[in-house]
Image 1 (cartoon, helix red, strand yellow):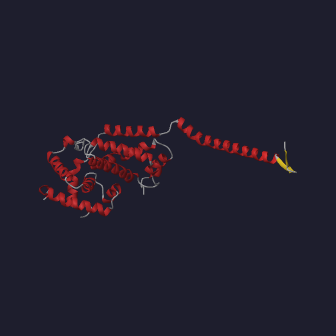
Image 2 (image 1 turned 180 degrees about the horizontal axis):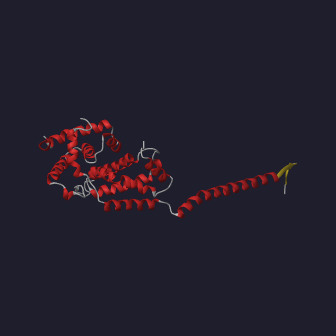
Image 3 (image 1 turned 60 degrees about the horizontal axis):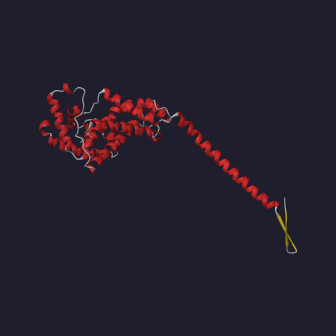
Length: 182
Length: 97
């Protein structure tokens, strides 16, 4: 259910052929969509390309978008599927050059205290060691600050499975980062 | 584990610097690329006119074909009606226009 009447009106305008109204929808969701993609592919350029593809794909299929539904979970699901497809493709065709993961770009990086940067890089490394779905769920929960229901919507897995992945990830992270948090 | 677990809450706070935050220039570039891709998908005036004329042309073609078939079959019927063969004493006579 879309609780945002302005967004519902914008979507209705796009559905009736007003492409300009789509710019405002992109504006509202772009950061979150890039964040979701980055949580999965761990590369800023890929995340930005995937976000672009997701918005174009959503526009091409806007006629199928159910009136009154929220756009956020829908575009989140599209970008998640595209990002998972890319990672699967890269795993399958190992001969393709696999781009190194890039640290997240932050405007205020230089201002972060060294201790906070160290803790963040320890968490990053611990997250990278988790199995794929645990890693994705944990990154979406911890870094994108998404709750269980939102993660379930964008990944297409049940809320119970999200809880289960997160619980397993939590146990492993607690063990790996014991010196930081005990 | 609760949704607002203390350990996860602390991890969230410490993991905040890991969030990818593209700058405004990057965001503007991506928005412009999306806009351009969508504009490419938009049909041109010529394509819109063509899309209107395509079904019209198809309808006219159907009418022409049906009319032609109708006229041809009427002509065939006319030939049959107009040509009457009469056999008398072993001889066949044709009566018609």
